Length: 476
Image (cartoon, rainbow, N blue to C red; front, side):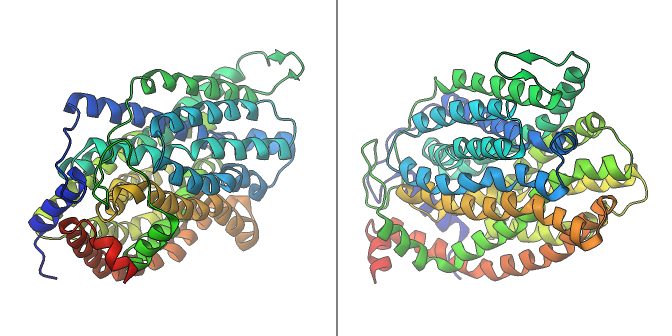
């Protein structure tokens, strides 16, 4: 590979600024562009609060409905992801053709109302279906938001913008634990409310109602966001009237770049099993093994995720920029590989420590490092994909990552606990076992993906120089 990092970046800049040689339209002011990122990041943060709040409510839900660990894990994982991934593909295609701001605002209303409905359920099936509805609503956000951000920022600023947006999910996860723990504690001290038609509801149900109602407030900043001009289109047409690629064009593009996309989708989706499984069961580990209260681990782990996790996303983007400057054109793949190698031992030992303090120390290291690849993983897809395919390509990524992560992550750990060790007190061993099974596979896939990713960057250079390059090569 002889292409210099400067050449690849210059070509990518041209591709993002222009539609195959068409003069670039002026970008909005930096202040407004960062306001848009902030509004979308806030929305992302709220979505993660509503997505992850059940992890702090496992114990009361399990008690009230008489559920096993495996059953309650389905509420945090499979129930949410069931339609999240399917609708994500549909929304991705819609976002490549329609008004992305409008799609997001409709989704916010839907998932907030669905979260509130979780607080009105009376059995496992009703709660399961309510969580399915939350997933349907949140499917609107990821593809639409990242596609919008790529139209507000040039190539040299894209990774940082995406790191702010992606970092918000860690703040949201932290808030789900910190604020969730606080809300649980406050509501537990209040008399159980009695609602017309529904009667008396439990504290965990009141928590769902409160969190869902707060979520609707993000519509206020979103109302000031403008739909951006589409940039970096493969056929050379930039502007609001640009149409998305056909399914045959998308499929041809993915086949042409199957090495890069296959490695990316496989590595990140398999690793998400470990990520979501850890977030779902780490509170239970401290509650069961170290005797902590739910609100205590909520505060500590929530602050850790919200600060170190968010910081790691930004630092990961900066690390990738440093590698690019040193000539590593595959930096967006190399950063995740480096992180997985470095984090393997501390993550394996984290839940095997004899004291809570030692576990927390290793957990802090793992929380910081594990978030490094989040923004660069999304940026990797952006820099090798034309505008009219970006939302769909990201939707496929979210489909794979969430089917594996949200769908299998919490349940994977629960199955190891229930059927591997046969005791809920073995949740720490289950988390370490998951690390030992998953990380080696991810490391191998990322290593194998370095060369195909560099080849896809070279193809990006070719079709950026010739507006029809990608379509012609794909058809050939």
